[in-house]
Structures are given as C-alpha cells and as structure tokens.
Amino acid sequence: DSRYTNHNDGTVTDKKTTLMWKRCSEGLSGSGCTGTAIRYTYKAAIERAEETTFATYSDWRLPNIKELASLAAYDRRDPAVNSTLFPNTPPS
Image (cartoon, rainbow, N blue to C red; front, side):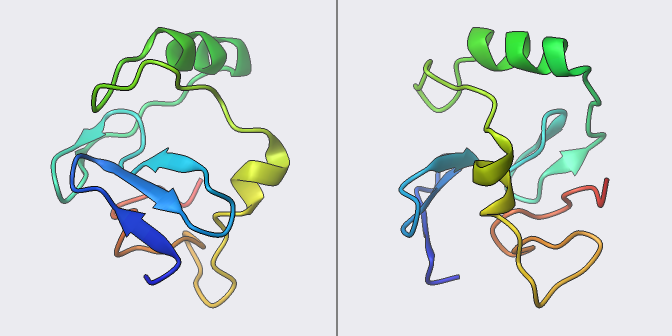
C-alpha cells in the first residue's frame, strides 16, 4: 500500500511510476468499487478514456502494456493487483 498515494477521490498515484490510476475498473463505482465491470474493444477503450472526465481530470488515456504491467502485484493472483487500492478488479 505504501507504493501508492490514495487521493480519496477515486484515484491513486503510483509513487514509483508517477502514474495516476482510477481505483475502480470501468463500470464499478464507490469506495468498494461495486457494480459490473465493462469490457471494451481496444478502439472503444481508447475513445472512452479520451472522453472521460473523472475526479476533475479530463486528460485520461489508455495505458500502454508496460504501464499496465506496472500494476502487477506478483504476490497476488486472480487478480494480480493490490486489492486494497483497486478493490473488486476483475481477474480478466
């Protein structure tokens, strides 16, 4: 948990990469990230990110594979992410 700064607005910043992330997968909301995650095609995901305003930020973008891999928590499985800061992340 110490690797991340929780901004308490639905976002966290990775102190190692300085990237900001939404805590909840698309379709999930609230402090516990409840709901149903939405699957997108690659093109639709890029468009969704570009049109999103969240926590007063409007410069969201889809991460590249290296950035996405930086979220991997190798001591966890299904999903391999920090489940405290990214709760209910779907394994796929």
